[in-house]
Length: 381
Image (tube, rainbow, N blue to C red; front, side):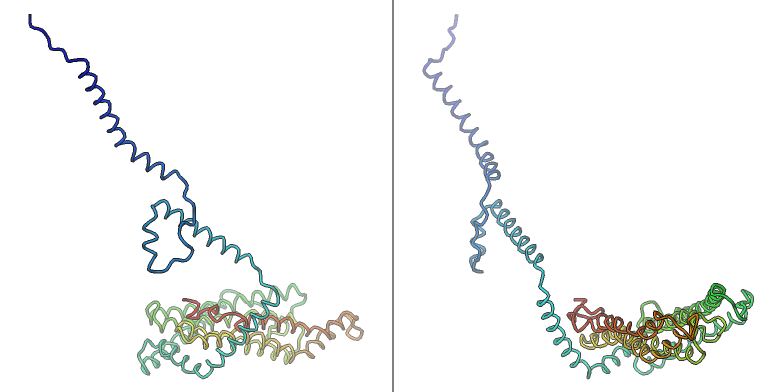
């Protein structure tokens, strides 16, 4: 029988030891790198590993010596510091004297800006009008004026047709003497509704011609739309004034004023509205044309202040007339109460509150940065 070969016990032990050692080395080679990487991610890195100030030529070298984790921690630390500094800055509330000094400084700056812009106002308005003609020169200007006349004419024609054909069929509002405040209010509401339908007919006719003549968002159409908006807004204000004053219907007048005084007040309101809307049109033209900052600031100030100034002038002009009306409308005109006399003598003091409002809204530009003026190119930047 053939004998099986048996390995010596010493050689067998060395072979077994070598295999175990080889397995252990391979295990370390596979597991150790991943364990080190995990340990590197889990170990917190102290912020501030980069100097606070690094020369430009050293930035790449300083960042290169950091690991990805260190770079991320450094970025988070810097962002937290900036956020904390910003929050602390926002919590600082300026004192009253600091706000006053800031307003005074801005007033001086904006006054100098407006003074320098006055000579340029005419040129900026001309440039805005040239842009409204779509760059077609004098012929474009003639075409723009022709479109304006056609638009207004179409609106007036539509209103005339409405008055002649439709209004009589809607209602026949009595205009005879009305007794009682409630009856006067009801009749005035009916009159106002009918007059508002006239305005609606004018608007429909004008808008129809505007849409047919010019394409959407073209410069001529934007300019004509601005004019049409002003006309409709003016007529709406006239409707509201007519509701209280009824200048052509003394029996429906809610305010006990004579015909002459009513006519003066109504005409003053019309002049105020026309002046205010005219300044608004000029301001919008230059603002939409992205004109000079100083000119926009000047026109914005005029636009916002003209209404308050004209109201103050009206109060001063009608001061005595209104006071006399208050005294005469007492239950016993010959013996008005002390309270009514005091109101008649002091009612005009309300002009001071209006003047304060005018300073706040009209001259706001004097106390605010020019970049905050609506329509300013600086505000759009």
